[in-house]
Length: 462
Image (cartoon, rainbow, N blue to C red; front, top):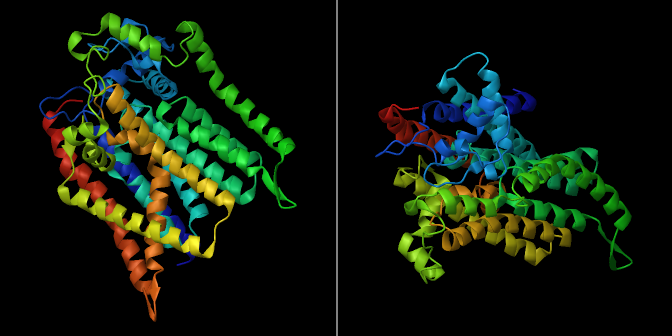
């Protein structure tokens, strides 16, 4: 079998396996609250109000309409960036021409996010080809990103997170291409598209946009006659081009919000006003006391509510409304995977430091990727401490791609350890990588078919 044919077969299996697992979740998980099992995805019953409104009326809601307000809470997800909901709503409206089945309409809306996940899987595949010369670890990276059970889950119900994750894959791919090939029309379009989708989907991932700006500027810093200089002319030529594309892509939404919401372009102030006016006392975010208001320290919050443990679990695999957990051995497996990855990264850092094998630009690139990992973590802790009690790992998923890159690079580094005549045999490394990939797919399948599906079938409610 030729290498090209083998590549196509693995790619087909990789994409097909993702689609099968994602479609299983999308077809069986309920949308409504299903106590006491709560197999429904987080807030989907509130999020679906936006695409339903678009389906019924053919227009985008302002977020002020009673029809899209979340019962009890008083505000609406329509106040935030709703681009993914727009795609889902008009997809539902098109499908509604042929059927009035609420189940089919729900599947069509969820299908938009499955498509985002599929596209993300393909971009991750392209990214892996750029980041890893060793095909074994390239495929391990692809499967580690896309078959994290929580990542599959996020692409199977109505939300804006799925579009956001796709946008992060586009931005990282664009940045890597720019640093390897230079900035050209193709790479600038990839970057512009990623920034647009990120800006129109999820505030928590805006750190990637900052990172794109930092790395873009750093790219034009040249060393001339022993001094660092900025190629301002070239930077402005490409910067203005990318900025114009991005502004054309996003300005319509923020201009609309400015006029519709009396200058509140992010919708946050309007959210507070609506909650104050319409929310019931028990769930009003303005009257619920946060950890900060109670006088707790961050350490007290962590110890009392097991914040970081729950965040880790729900970064790996917690389905439903934080109700369907994985088996303990699944979490242990990922603890081992991440532990070995971090150990390998530390060894790689020491190796590079001793041999000075990394340039200043590469250091800056890695610092930015670490920033993209740390920003979602910081925001999750900040929101849990100052705004509400949520510390869900799905808020950390924007960090998934750079995090898994370092984990796989760390594992690869461990296989390069040599002492005297000892070195890991190539056959053993290949077998270990194949088993790791099989294990990643098995864990994802086990979570879906053994842990989640029986609960979905018990609820019997779509």
